[in-house]
Image (cartoon, rainbow over all chains, first blue to last red; front, side):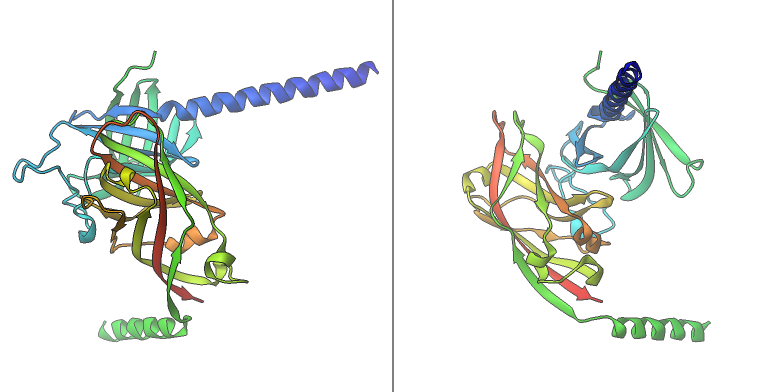
Length: 155
Length: 170
């Protein structure tokens, strides 16, 4: 009888610690959710979770209007000509990121509206309010890292 | 070198000829409620709807994802059941997302015409791997909306979406 109780206790304990660890994993993954500012300070990007992946879109632009036309900026450098009138405000730059553990998100892409290129990308949170965003083509070694800061500081 | 190019072209032609026929299909969703959770501020907001994929209802009894060789969207029309809410939208970008499949931007309209209750989106020329969405149990329809004004509560776009697509079977 004692053995059965001990076994039950051990199983219950294991189940709780496992659930706890999963919750903690979820919390770590959702650390990415929020509004972030790239180092150039010209835009702010809101990252949210849709289904089981993370996506980031422009929610604020320092210069929202095209200086030549005076109209809201559009994605004029998109390689797909049919999509060049899409508004830049609301544009999804970061797509399809999944959490890999250890504060890292991968398998996603980042789009640069300044040249219309899309790069493979990994994101690493160096603390709760700082992200290293590394865009690359092919091999991670040959890429560029930008540091993004959370707009509303998480305490 | 020329010979090799001719050979490749011939191989492509043979491959194209071996595929099944391409069918133009129009399908309308039931009334969907695309919800953007408030409070919403003027500027960019997102409304999503999770659409269960029933291939038999969509393409016919016995149809499976393995039967699909290629899908290309040719038209997207959104007909609002509550056009008042559509008038709050300045522009819309429409995307498909799903588990294990890269998000695809398939259409947009910028700006929306005033007082419209039905809008025809501009469809992307470049589409890649859309057939993968037909192998999913559900597709998340993602609408990024720039609103014309701030909105306190949730914004619900009650709409029917009509998709036109070319479907090539194997």
